[in-house]
Image (cartoon, rainbow, N blue to C red; front, side):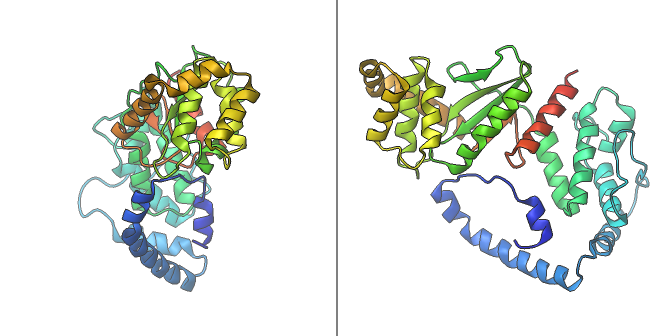
Amino acid sequence: MGSERGRKRGGMGDCIPRSAALKNQPIMRTFMALAAAALTLLAACGNQRSEAKAAAAAGAMAAAGKPDDTTPPQGVDVSKLDEGEKKIFFRVANKVASACGKAHSLIYSAKNDPGCKRSIFALRYAAKLARDGYLESEITEALEKRYLQKAVKIDVSDAPMKGDPKAPITLVEFADFECPHCRHLQPVLDRLLEEYKGQIKVYYKHFPLRSHQNAEPAAIASVAAQRQGKFWALTTKFWKNQDALAQADLEKYAQETGLDMKKWKEDLGAAATKQRVDKDRAEGDRLNISGTPTVYVNGREVTDAKEYETLKAWIDEELEANK
């Protein structure tokens, strides 16, 4: 969308299977129609977000029950929010459950449960979303996705890894060598590994999309290179030459990487090599991954854009929560 709010929300996208994209076209058309109508209303009001949001919040006041707590907890700054944004923030803070799964609200948790640091993080995130112009329902959904999801177990026993094996924070990336968003993510991960030395490690898992004809052969080629300890060296060439991943290209990069070509070709044709890729993709299917890149931080799926600032915030929160 062309609005200021749309620009604020923009970020690194995902590569999705073509079938999923086609399946969602009617939904997207409906969404775009509703969005266009919403933008027309917003354009008529100029930039007066406060009045619109205050009215929306007032119209959704609870009919009964205890009055909302409208005092921010220590460590949560709402001073940059206007009145409409504050009303939305406090409604969410009083409605969404504790980030630690307890039977009270986020704001109660932040003030009365010192063992639940995640509720403070969740409220800071809610304040940021309110300031960025998100609706109450959108903030609620974002909070529930980010903070109420259960961590999942991911098998990384065979996955190549970068970083300190003893690092407390584990990032797992499911990616596709032909996905441009995955390519853009690689320098972000390298920067984070440099800045958080000894604190994070990154595992790579294969999720080649069937709509990318060279993605699976490239994944298989990388597994064969991993058997010689050169997964990262070879895949660096894949990312740099993403538009040239035909079989002849893969062999060229393997030679340039200094692989034992005889062994590499033997491993390339071995059933066990393809099975490794299939195993990763099956795990991605089990986790309901629909596009790439998909990133997990200590088993929690990153629900925001896979950009430097976003991933840094997730890592910082995880480090603080586990102190």
